[in-house]
Image 1 (cartoon, rainbow, N blue to C red):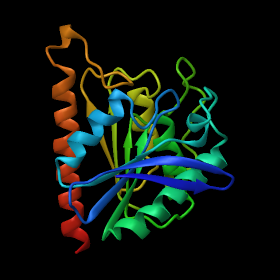
Image 2 (cartoon, rainbow, N blue to C red; image 1 turned 30 degrees about the vertical axis):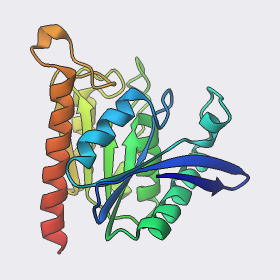
Image 3 (cartoon, rainbow, N blue to C red; image 1 turned 45 degrees about the vertical axis):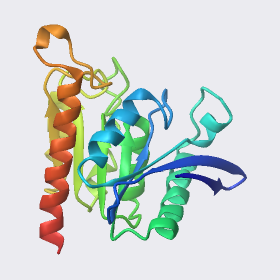
Image 4 (cartoon, one colour; image 1 turned 120 degrees about the vertical axis):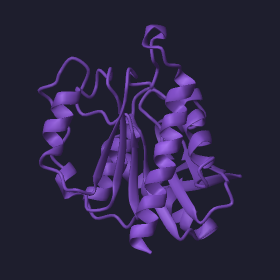
Length: 220
């Protein structure tokens, strides 16, 4: 189902991928992607297979066909608008926010602000720019109080594993970190790894389903 969502003076497109569930995941795209890129569609499919409705959307700069991402305040405002529309249309019992890379970071900053959601699902968190590990994007992470599931590949140039593990020492027990062996920032693995991209996606789906089920039992 396609929605048109008002965000200030902009209007964006959102797509509801239904699993017929009472759990909805608002999934934001990365800086270089869009709501219909191959990677986001693949992630949506494996998460939806776990009984979770997925709502994908384009940020305003993608609607304008611009390559320059919107400022962070507008990225956050867009997620808020899509969440409001999702609550109105679907009335989910459980609502998760998150997404890929930049989109996941924007959602994490919303969660750190205390935005009303039930959990955060982040794919390829961009802890630092590629080649600049000293520029950490971690200051807000300890402020997140909702349950978090974060996927990053062990070859991700934007999230050095030892740095992320060090950052997580100062983050609460609500954060679950799942490392995808051999995967890069796009969740692609080399043939020499002995794994396939499809296996990585299946791992994301299985781990997401287990996390949602475990967290749901705790909060019932």
